[in-house]
Length: 131
Ligand SMILES: [Zn+2]
Ligand SMILES: [Zn+2]
Image (cartoon, rainbow, N blue to C red; front, top):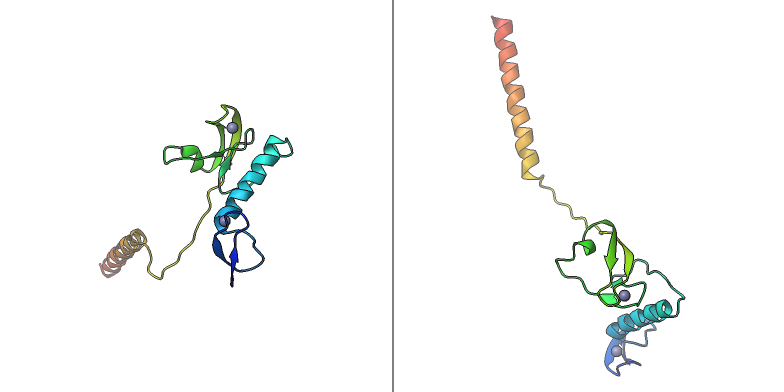
């Protein structure tokens, strides 16, 4: 890891590989490139970006927690607050996995109920046989 000067903002940043810009500038540059290709007509869609980018005007659309389209898996029709044009927004929610040894308590409870039921049945069967 070496320290470099960002060619865009002039700030010193830590570089792992061959980057010439700091992370912030790289992200900004990336968005600018996308916007440029949309405005020039080269691109009419964006794919798997971490931001919602209007395919008409190239603006990044900031959602808040009220913008359910951004959080619901599936295809939505969304209108751009910048240019008022409608476009298809496909949202894919990503999943994160974690594991633990303990089983969820509702599963343990269900299993306990099943076990108790079995015990009861056994007792009944035994008393019938004895009877
Ligand atoms: Zn920079
Ligand atoms: Zn727009």
